[in-house]
Structures are given as C-alpha cells and as structure tokens.
Image (cartoon, rainbow, N blue to C red; front, top):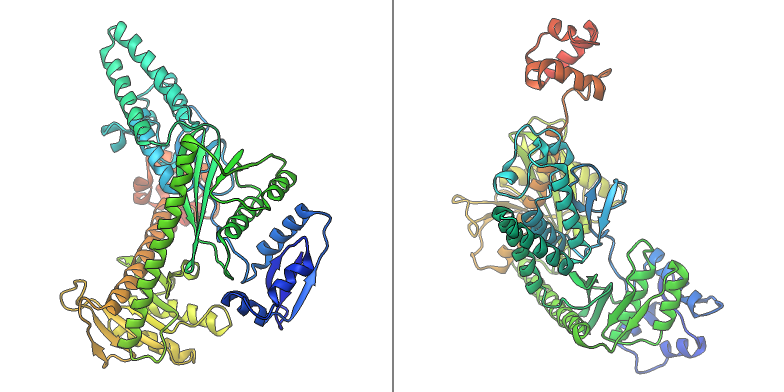
Length: 588
C-alpha cells in the first residue's frame, strides 16, 4: 500500500501493488506519461508505504482511506444517497409506500430499488391491480368518507370499513408475491381463482380477476428481459477521454427492478478495467449496509476480482461471484448495461459541452475577461406571505452543483415583503461566506427587477463583500420567456438579449431552477405548518388533552369559536389553561 502527498501534506493518491518498486518506478519515468498522470507526479512531495499481510488487507485499507480522505487523483464514486425501498407497514390494513433511510418502521421492506422512479412504477401497478392503500397513516386515520382513490378504483376504502380484513389481507398477499418477484406464480394463482369464480357463476368476481391478470401480463410482456433467475447486479463500465460512466442494472428474483448511472470522478487517465475495479470495491466495500447480490455480471475482467471477492466475504460474511462470459438472458442484460453506459456518458458530455458554450456566451455578453466558474441565483416563494422560503441554486460550467444548493426559512419580516426576505437570505448567506464558510460566486443573479438588485447591492456593501457581478432578471412587460429585462450591477444598466441567445437560455435555466427549488421548499414548509395543530404550542396541552378537547367540541373550528368560559367547562381544563388555549387560537 502506498500513499502520495503534496507539499501541504494533503493526500493525492492511494494505491496498492505486489511489486512496490516496479509500480512507483512507472510513475517517475522520464517519458511516456499520460498528461493527467504527469500532473499528479508534478505535485508529489512525499510517498508513504504500508506493508499488509495479504492483498485482501491491502484492498480493505485502500477503500478505507479513499472513503475517508477522497484523494483527488483516485477514481471516486459519488454515491451518498440511500437507496429507496418499498415499505409495507404492519396492521390490519397496511399501506405501501416509498422509504429511504434507517428501517425503523414496523413492517416489511422490499428492495432496494435503483431509483425512486422504478418504485413508483411498481406502486402504480399494484394500486391499479390490488387496491392496497398508499396514503399516509395520518390521512388514513382521519377519513370519514372515501377519498378520490376509491372513486377511481385505486383503493377499497379500508379507512371507512368498505372492505373486509380478510379480503384486504388477500390483496396484500398478492402484492407481496409481486414484490418478491413471483409474478408468474401469482398469475397462475389468479387464473385458477378466475376459473373457480366462473364455475360458481360469480361473473363480476371473475371479471375483476381477469383485469388483474391482464395488467400483470402486460408488465411481463414489457419486461422483455424476464426469464433469468436469482439476485444479480449487472454492471458495465465505459470510458472515453471526456470521463467515465458505470451503469448498474438491479435484478432481483429474475426480475429487472431498474437501473442507475454513476459517473465516477477519474483523477488520472484510467483504463476501463481500472474504473470497473475501483467502482466495485467502493460500491460493495464502502457501504456494508448496501444489499449484496449473489452474483455480479460485468463487461470487463480485472486481475483483482478474486481479491475483491475474498475481501467482500471477509468484510460482509457472504460469498460473491463475478461473471463475465454469460449466455442467453444474462448476456442480454450485459449488453443492455454496456449500451446504456455508452449512451449515458455521451449524453452527459454533450450536455457538458452545451453548458460550457452557454457559459462562454454569458462571459461575452457581460464582457468578462474569463469565463465564470460559479453562478448563484436567489428567489423567494410564499403564499400571501405564509411560510416564506428563499432559495439559492448554484451552477458551474458542467451544470447544477446541487451539493451547494441552500434554502432559507425567512422569519421576522412583514408577510409578503419580498425585499426584506431577499435581504435576510443574502445577509445569512454572505455572512457565512465572510466567516470562511462556502465560496464566493463569480456572478450573483437575483430573480426580480430593480428593487431586488438594489437590495442585493446594499447587502454586499453592508458586509463589505468584494466586488461581485450582480445581475437582476425581471420578466419584462409581457412576462413571457424570451422577453426578460436584465440589469447589470445597477438599475441604470438595463438591457435585453435575443430570444435565441445561449446566454439568455442559461439565465432562464438557473432562474427557473431557483424558482423550482424555492417553491418546493415553500410547499413543504406550508404543508408542515398546516399539519401542525395550533394547540401544540400550548404548555400543559399534550396529545391526550388535545384529543379530548377536539372530541368535546367536535373539532378545531368549534373550539376556536368557544369563549374562555366555554373552554374552561371542558373536562380537565382550568380557567388559566383555558385562557392560554384561547390566546393561542386567536393569536396571528
């Protein structure tokens, strides 16, 4: 094991080798180095080594160091999101839903699925076929009549007792069979039930079963790769001079659940086999909670695969097989993964080039000496002053930098005062930057006209932030896309761009993304506020007393209309507590 450091003792690269002298000599030869490898060598000031007992220990140590320090010249996998599961809750009438994170809820978890989109497809099918509810428990527990899902035949309304527990349990059992990958067995069972219903002259029941079978058959027909078996991850790597892509297809119980693209950060020029080896090691060794299939199907072979399998068994206590030469359905899976990896990387590089061209066009429009590397845009969202949220989105030449997105819950301003809300958001954001947190943008965009621009300029002057390029984006007189009015640094510097200008398209894109991010945060905050009872902030009123109060008055509306004296007549409510409740319900 060897580690390369720069002059500031920052870790640049971690590697392992059986013959350390030969490996290190390959970095320091005078000719034949790739440009990126030469860039690494130019920064090396120190090399440290660690001797391990075997290759397995070296691989485990390498992955530990890469995960902890993320050296810039290693192949790095950015995969910090948890994978989604389908969650089936406990109870007489359980619900199906999407779940991420720790598995704390009581019930069963199916997955993981490679993306939330794959889960939504499965849940949509189950809702149409077996009518198992997917509403939240808080919504379910407070229903007094069937909701729209019942009217459009997507639920049997267990919330109001329109289905027997035994019938609902059978629907849940069929849903579980589908989620476990036993769709063919499920179809055969439904066929038998349909025949029995027809023989018993229960034609309505037979028609329902026929429709369920038709939906399942349709899915099986769409699933052209159906026919394999077992739990398999199919992984293909593709590399070209612009970057690398790894495409992963998840197969569980012989059924393809979905796929996902990964774009590892490649620090130095690497062959496709090196990218594959680095991906597998980080993906399956870096997160021991990630589900491990029995087999991996890959498109290239690396000499370290045997070591990787041994390391996985050592770390996770399960055997792993890596296959390359496969036939039949498995070969189709493999080819599909290769095709998707190639197309995904090409699309990403084309989008990156397109974005870079837009940044260059913006630099020309703003008459900048250098192309900007970081754009920030701010927007405000609220509903008549309620639950005001400010958003900050960040773009670079390669597209959105979502890790740097921020939202600000605005407090203490006059409801509906967008200027004050913008002032607070910018003060909080750039105050942190002045304290050394975060990076300064090259161009600061604000969604709005002269007022918002002047507000941003005042904040920057108050905080003594170095000169930034300010750009106000107003919708213009027609309020249609393509007719925006722009203000550069000052309200007097007003100009417009042609509708086909790449620079204007970039401004519109970041403006729309800021608006989307703000309104999403606002809706979430507003929804949370409306789900919170106004009684929750009253000292001495806990869940039981709230429930008793609402039951006594017949609801929050009647309680709000009650006087202090009427509230004090409720069981367990003193005159002093009644006054607190009244004040809470009638405060703005």
